[in-house]
Length: 605
Ligand SMILES: Nc1ncnc2c1ncn2[C@@H]1O[C@H](COP(=O)(O)OP(=O)(O)OP(=O)(O)O)[C@@H](O)[C@H]1O
Ligand SMILES: [Mg+2]
Image (cartoon, rainbow, N blue to C red; front, side, top):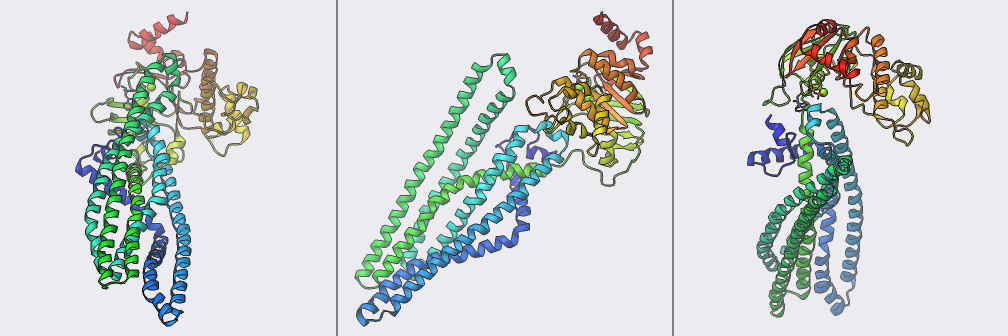
């Protein structure tokens, strides 16, 4: 459980981690980074070498200028010897061109590297989130999943594309420049090194401050996005209950918070940049002053001084970029932390290590002493045992929140019981091969999701290799063919196009056809007919009677009409079965179901 709290499935993205948690998160990010970089090691080395060589070429410039002024020029003027001058010009040009060519190459190598890593990461996030169990998806909001795949990936790409280059080449360039300066004039080098102390303090201040501000800005911007997404997703409820004015206030407040935190971040730059300029100016002034004195007394030459000043200036120039990059570095680390969190989530319903094959499931379902709760602190099914023989049609009724859907989710193995086991034909669902499990047990819910594509595609989801004939037959069996034929393009109608939009009840009919085409041994209908009108429901029931004849069925419905076709009725209350018998027997008795049924009969007349 400890890993899930760190990764945040149990709540929102937090920023108040303990020291140990932070350490674990950092380790997790590094692991992800390592696994991303390993396949592209060779390219990484290549990029590194190209960068080192091209930086060395760039750093040669001022030294060549010093040589030109101090040695080559006097030789030309005093001895009419132009050779050193020509030589230095040629070398200058060659290193300039070579440096430029290498940089060009580096850009391509680095881009290829970035794209390879991004491709890998993008696919991993998709495949992994898809693989995770329902429990993850029920607690990790879709908005958060979407930002993993979009804005987080974008920040990582930004880092790899620009920021990282900036930092690595900035540091490399700074280091090489300092070395060159020490070689050409060690005293100026010492001045630069000493001025490195205030520079370091300034950078550190900026880094820690901007980290704090950046955190705040992330929290606030997340709130802005959540508010926006929530309002737009619930727009019908917003309009129905006239929540617009309240939303306006709330959103206005969040948006101005966001502006304030952005202002603070800009103010940081407003302090940092002048500070950097001051340190740079002082350093240049000191080098110039001390160098000037030495030029006058003849201990160094003027060309050397020029080179020293150029080096000092060059040393400071990339620092501003590096500072800008610190922000993208932070957003990328944050993104990496969150992405690695998702990627390290394990499915709570894992595939079996040694799967048991069940080629021909008969459909005998049992619950053996099952205890189940979605979380440890609240038990939904306290002690549940049930035996459903193969081929039986069971109607499951009970009050709202009794645990009917929970039972259905356990039979479909969307969740595993906390203790005890659920079996199909005597095999624990936990060891059943996933392909057999999905083929043998199908659940149809009220949700009836349609994917983009045609109506036929959506029905064929139950059996990808189905022929058009089989698809039509399935639709006919559930009474869906009549309305499908009336759609603009019949079975080929795109469900996302105008005219292809189907009603909630029609969606349910399509998902019924889908389930019948899948032909499972166990069929679970969880309020699957709730959106149908009475004639359609009756039609479905006629179809059900024949279609359920040779399979096990669990039908959850508030409308008791379903019960007519059931062999057995289970009445559930607070996670327990309180009545269990044939429908006639229960109706004839004086229990809960008899009362429910009497009330329902009355409501019909
Ligand atoms: N994903 C979940 N996480 C935590 N608790 C849940 C989850 N789904 C359901 N519950 C809780 O489990 C209990 C049983 O819910 P369940 O959906 O099984 O009820 P139900 O009998 O299907 O009710 P209804 O007739 O309203 O569909 C409820 O108290 C509910 O709060
Ligand atoms: Mg339910």
